[in-house]
Length: 154
Ligand code: TYD
Image (cartoon, rainbow, N blue to C red):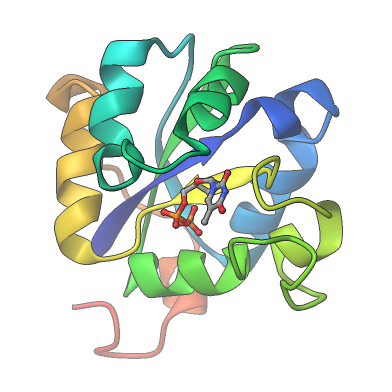
């Protein structure tokens, strides 16, 4: 089992898509193991987007991420990082495949609805950044035997 971080960005919150996007993850079979609303500030955004701080679009990216609270989610499943990235789609919503979240709900490179961790290593770092350990829950998934085949989820 793997846990990954998803942020529902202000573009998701403000457009009234929180429920719709959460529904997609639940319908896919991912288990929600942490979820909260947060107001981001420059301190956390500089860490979260440390690979982009020198890019010309960083100031507008940081500003866009502060325009409203976001929803932070921990999603758990087998190979959850890869499963969720696949659902998220290409960064630029205009080029994201239909059927992905960005390809279905976004026409923007920046206002692209969701963030999702891009590797197991960044998922670990990002989960620690956005959640206290006690805010992530381990609990039995009642439908586990119908989500995965025998031996698949060990
Ligand atoms: P990045 O980590 O490259 O992509 P992803 O979110 O798909 O992992 O970029 C982080 C965010 O930065 C991206 O979701 C939106 C923003 N961004 C821009 O605003 N302009 C750009 O040209 C790029 C590449 C990203």
